[in-house]
Length: 301
Image (cartoon, rainbow, N blue to C red):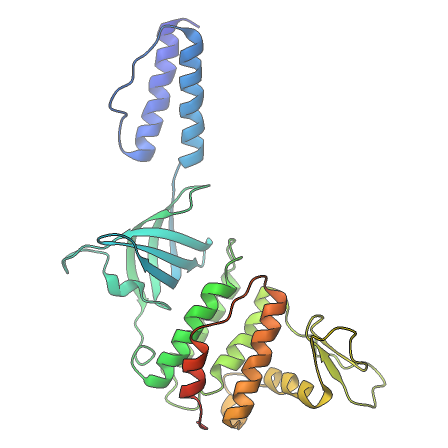
């Protein structure tokens, strides 16, 4: 291949790269040496394959946002079509901008357009608009505490959800909309939400009772099931506490107001659930918002 055709190939690659990035390199000197032109062409083709963007239009849940410099945010999203994504967002100082800072509060439900590039940590968010406008979740004291806790919990629990999971996304969205519309009787909401969330994460408890059981039952937190004999390890519930698991699994959003719990019961149930999650999710940390939630629901509701 002569230098004319080699340069033609390079121009073709550069045009493809320009369509991807929207710019041309400022200076490019074509060398007549075949080997150098081949190297340039190979590198540019590799860059094009690596950084080629795909426009993704999807629903998204804001898990976390962090201020980065002047007028920029790093926003962590859980999307319906692509799982967990981290995006760099340029937030204008004026109210005329399309991307508004209030869109990126934790637990906001958005419709977004994202340029997704493989092997790139921070994606580019093109557009965002509110998909759901909450009526009470962001204003009522009790719901604010639940929302603060759930936002921190989901940010930690969904670390490994890099692939799309539409059922998981729909469950979270439905749950948040239900809480927003509920006027009262939601003090056990976080317990129900966490226990049923485990089904989507792959460690839903096995509630089957061993056949011909006559004595007390223990609950093995590692195996996620009941057993007649206490396990050899320490991660289990005694017989008098194993009934808490059965009680929580009987609750759903419609009937949970019928299960009356005092502060100690609710605190202990949450401790058990979080301990269960820590055993099944690696490096799951202590949650800073837990104390706020426990204080708000210190009385029956």
